[in-house]
Image 1: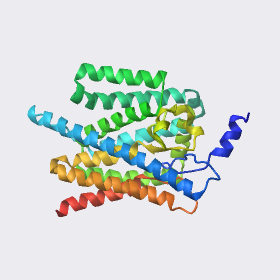
Image 2: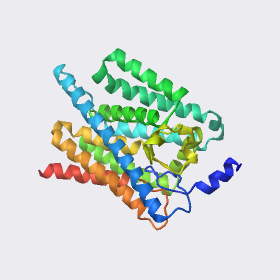
Image 3: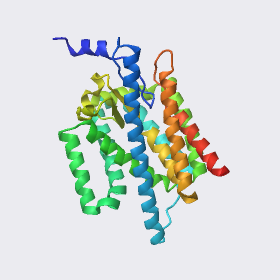
Image 4: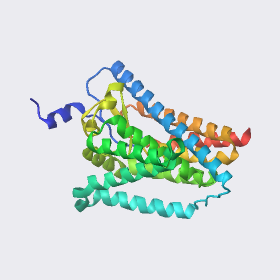
Length: 311
């Protein structure tokens, strides 16, 4: 029976990760089969992307309605505050990726951030649908399953809740023009992190090794949703859509809520077009390499914003 290392050498070939991270795809299969696999994966990617947006936008509307009834005004997050948080987060990422002593506790760190994000997102939106007690029970059950009997569908469900909750809450705290500036900066950062320092790729590898992935795991088939996330690194039938590629355009869409639901939906639609564009850029490469996905998503989102100003 072949060893695990031999299996990896035969199966892994750099394919697209929407955060610019390496994902595997089987070598030696025909272009037709590759195209079919690619389109199936993109289909699920688009479905989960849209599901997160629908849940996040609906939750933001409900939260804003409650705030209006209670006459509560959320404080806006300033550009300087966000940049401070961003610099701190980048510093933490670099420590996790490059500091050798961190390697032994890396899995624990990733689990902490994953659970924190899941709980934050769940507490932000689940009470809107189930009430406080049932919301707490739901997130407790999901996290228990994630720890004890992890599957891709449980992982993705937690990520959808997390990203929708974070996107809806932060979106209500930002002005659209500030988000545009942040998207430009983050797009430049994404480009540098993938093509220059490549620390995003290294972080993706370390996440795959631990089985704790801060992003959506996109399978080729419905049955693949029952796979264990820890086995994703050995499969050719998965890609990963980084959490930031969903959260930041969602924040942008929600920040448009004060201008009306039509403006929100236009920006959301153009964010989806950005996802399509990033996927097209990837598959049209002569040599498939990791690409930063946020720049095209941010660009199309901003174009959507400009259109809202013209109508």
